Image (cartoon, rainbow, N blue to C red; front, side):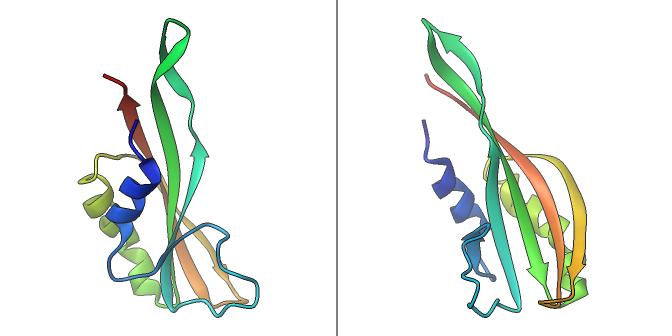
Length: 117
């Protein structure tokens, strides 16, 4: 099966830094705007001869920005790159404003279906 992390990061790379959720060090200064991703779950969806032959990966992608206008455009940004890369959108939501860092946030969930041929 494909390297799902490579597909995901290739899709998200662009104008903003992309990191796995939690990858920023506690003493690291956060960028003005950045994107994170996190694997939520990855269940096998089909089996053949007791071996998995397909799976569905669900990722959360999030944009954090000190500019609320960028946060408001996050859904359109994610749709434009994630759907093109073969992901299916399964919902989005605003994240609470972080007073400590001054970042607004928006997160979406995307699914990627894989099968072995």
